Length: 314
Image (cartoon, rainbow, N blue to C red; front, side):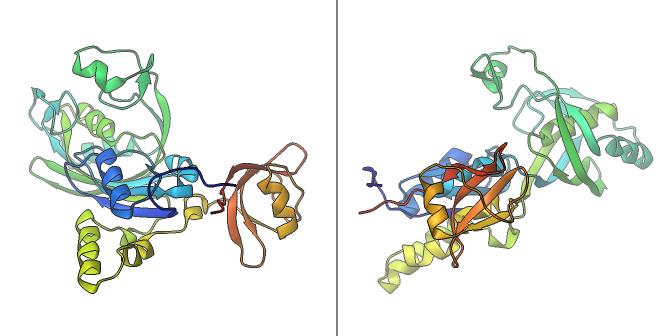
């Protein structure tokens, strides 16, 4: 396929950015896109400016597979300020009630236990979900409350870390679509004192290793180092990227002969031995197991391509 006209270079992969406090996810994305001089970039689910931690950023063809990370589990560390409820459920909002803390450790433990497992959650008005084409937080900022449907969520782990003074610290491993602010707000109401988030850090997305996270400051340091050494920044930046198929590594792999893979690249479903009977698969080609995209097993047991890596020719 001939190359479309785009500014920037063809660089493909996933960067695990350790987002800093106060930086919006979109600002972080645009900064990284410029530093890498990438022609395309996208993130995999926004983090609030108040939150820090893991923000996977997809560059180039990896953007096609970012939606699979949107569906993945997340792990957070959160500090709740007990005794105060705010209109946004975090420290940026206005305090709407202050109540005495009169609960015991046992009552706290019982309240925490009620959030474990599969439950239903009503999203906060201060979320990016849409109602009639408009984001909920846009209504909230105008003082308008709109109906929201409860959604099924799963809290796989909710670990109590500490309770000191007004602060309760927790670690939460949860399914997609879980609002930590809402859990904290609901916890405060269960205990009769109110609560809001003062600290939120995303520790993990899917199975990505936290040790591979890199800060914006580190990226700038590497660029400065490259200038000092008289080399291109990409030589130091590109090794930080994880493979583009890391976004869908949980899918079973189906390895195809090059001649069969050729049909897949043309959008045609194919038969393959050893393929699962249903679900999504990660498709690789040849002995080198080159990743070419993801497919889905159709009703006839064939691998139907769903997202393919496009190979451009100069």
